Length: 491
Image 1 (tube, rainbow, N blue to C red):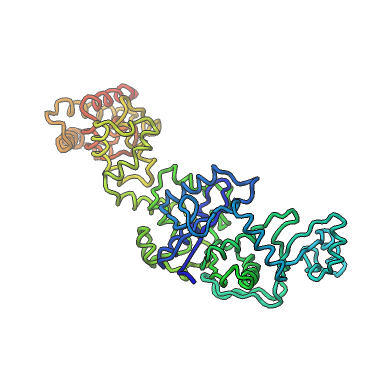
Image 2 (tube, one colour; image 1 turned 60 degrees about the vertical axis):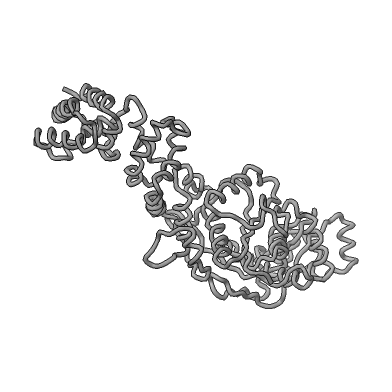
């Protein structure tokens, strides 16, 4: 057998769910930690739901997070093709072998007939298929065919308990007879997911299947199918299974695909950095240490142990995700931070992409101060807007708080006088002049003294440090904004 081989095999439908990306991350980390192979495979047999656009988006999301795959679409590998839609001939051949070996059989019963048999036996109709077609004679099969019936192909389930040691949950047992013979191939020849998924895993020599807890009830069927596939030489044993905990949202409900909080795009568009988002996803069911939440992808792969994944549901906490992202943002070198924030500023029409030399100078100067104050990159847009526009738009709530009444007028007049005659337009001199004029001259507390000035020059009550901002803004624009704010003060 080869070394550890994990796989990530999503269906390309709609948006990318945070739980899906967490599954990809854990499979990737397990493969990287063990020096194994990470296989990416596309389950695209549902033509009505799958789309090329969703596939491209899925690939883009994995690459954004920093997950690379060793085999799969766009990379290739010895076990291709890696898209189910291109593997129909493979499934046909395996189904024929299972039928010939007696592991699978043709079943002609309709749902109505199964239900009627269950009710006649005094059983709950919801129990489903009753294994009644296992021993049909050739004559019976011929009669059904003469009626125009097309049989489904079912797997003959073993008559003993199905047990496995789950990498996350320990021993899991399903009693003999609790899982009916299930359909591998529809009457029209279309193979079903519970069949094609293990067949692909077997042929791609997957050793470790890490997947969502919602798929746990299907595992007994996979174990039975693996035993049959091994018997006919398609598989070389059964992989280890690990069922990852649900990701829940508010109120501990499973995070559904319809919940906007579940869509990875929301976080990318807000300006989460991949390092921060991957760090937080890793915490949804796993921890690197009891007293540590922040780590790099390299540190995660070195420490990742799938047997330490929790079986308990993991709540997606946006506030915690933001806090971790902010830590990663603060750790970026200034040039890196600037490069990542430029697309957001360019998208808002504030700078060119790439920025002009003057825009670049201002950005590099203000970046370290912005880095300390934002939790996602998009927040930088409103924080630095005032530096890249000719006239600032003052937030009405900020104006109501800081620019109402005679106190504000007095502060703005004193600040204007102090700054107009300043010989050297530098941060230390601006600070000294304003403190002398407003704190000592007017006897104001710093908060009262500088609030109106901050709102006048930046338009907001929260901005990067005031004196540095005024230096970068320049004398002309600073005085113009103080004058405009003064003119707007009532009285």
